[in-house]
Length: 441
Image (cartoon, rainbow, N blue to C red; front, side, top):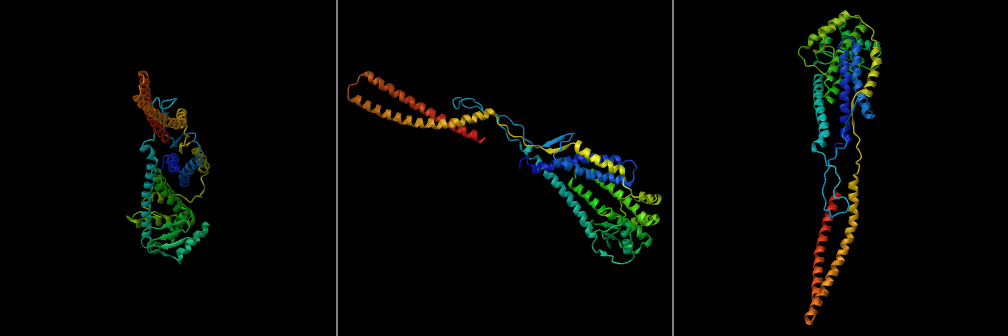
């Protein structure tokens, strides 16, 4: 495939544009969230940056927008390199030089888009393998899962679900290989508990635990976790994806804690449940799921927030909701990006056209001259025969010396014609070879 193939350059243009836009928006989100803000606001900022990066890069490349910042064109025709070749002066009339012709670019200049695309594919494939390994580890840990089909915990979960206005059915199960409660799935959500949560926790602590996991399901936290991990695999060149995932996971735990406090009204029970579940973890490997307690989560900060903060209404941050569309629009219009360069039409060189026209005209002349040379050759052969007859006649008769001298001069002129005939034939052969070479360029 040539470097101007849009099947190669279009994905590279989108990737380059996304890297630029995501660096701008995610970097801005990192700067804004350095100060102390509410978890809801921080979450909105990071989600807007993630979605906005995908939207702006896709809009700018698919619609062919020319941003006010800058646009880098990928591909396009290479600069022509001129080559001049001299022709014999007697070969063609008119110009005696071949017009500048385009030389094929180097192998590296031709192949770099394919190399870049394959590097992106291989890097993404390696990230996907790591993600599949983590998913497989979770599936192994979930072996032996059993549904909880009755009992007070299922009744408590159904009460919390109806109170939250959720229409989706939530499956409740227990798995002996788990150390902490987790929430899985988007379309068929499941809350999986370790045996200790069913056996050791009192009902007062079970309710906030179920409320916390139900909040993960209601907020689609498993979906956002999968999106972040998928972006880390596909666009592995963007390190800010990992920063965004850590911030979103932290905010998700804070907001699920707030949701559990609002639904149960028992902050102390939630704090005790959180510390109790955290003690079950030990040195277990983190799983790609939304768990109530994680070795990477800020446990002390969560407990302090639960005990110190009173339940607050879950209001949408109006400022961020209003600013985010404006930032996305500004990024589409102003942020630099990449685009596939349009293939410039090859402008024919006038001197080359004239030369080609001359060679085409010469082709007809060559055919005519060749035919004349053949006829001339026959006439020369005829004259040679007649001269031979006259010479034989002069040997039998007494012919004046002047007549013999004329016969010698005529014989010499015929020899000269033979020599010129051979020269013209060689020139015509050279002209035919040159014309064939020009037509192949």
